[in-house]
Length: 320
Image 1 (tube, rainbow, N blue to C red):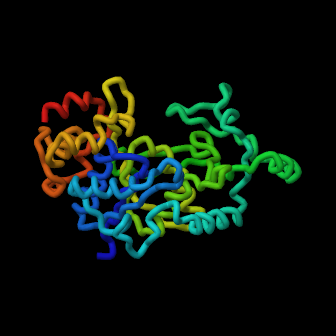
Image 2 (cartoon, rainbow, N blue to C red):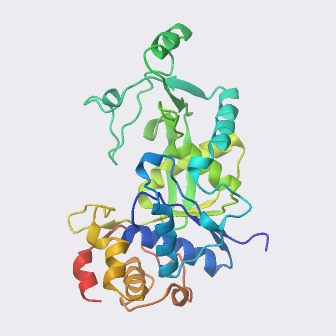
Image 3 (cartoon, one colour):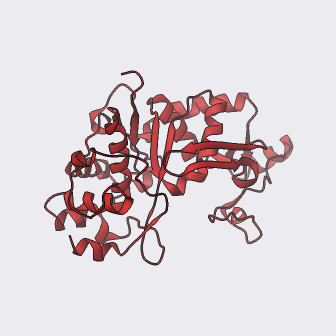
């Protein structure tokens, strides 16, 4: 089946998964499997200092316990490795050189404090829009600043709008220059930025569908522009709702009682957890226990809600 869906789950192995990670893994798995496709497991460990030894193995064990096996990647390996981003530097370097040859890159010497200064333009989602301060530095200025500290590398973006149809959120359009700005492709410490790495890896792994959190929706036009400049195929996207606490705070790995470690200790099987998530995102009418395999029947993106999910998760879990 040449046209089958190739989905992926691409977590950062920095600790145990939480409910939001599980929802993303579940929907990516259901979408690919319901169309006869397959799943790639990629470990996004670009910042190795955040990824303790053994975390990737624990993540794989959690996915298998949830009933969400994958077809290639992780410890399984496969034809499109490496599947750990920390091992993919040569691919990112090649992409960087391609962009450099097109004159799309420039060094940026701005410090974190300068980027987040009070007078820096802030967007509605809290991100700081880069001012373009280093975009027009002369060769002499670049050489002088490089003697003080190494620069980050930014990609200059053009004027104009980029639009795409998201499977969950519908039509999304963005003025890349005014709503996202020139963005990093490599940090000053030499670590490649997420935007570049994810584009390169999705393409070389043959990924045709990306399921991820709605917080990354605004990054997608930048990634589509990168794909265009690198002559890479674009996957379909589905940006799913985020899980929020009653006060609107996003769930994270800091919520220890909602981690897979705590949930596996509380429940003998994954069905109550998966059934609750399926109910909250719109796939079933009641929070009844269900396996991932059972949720395949009747899966449709039309059922998945668009808006973020705000709930008292500890209270809900106590009722299961």
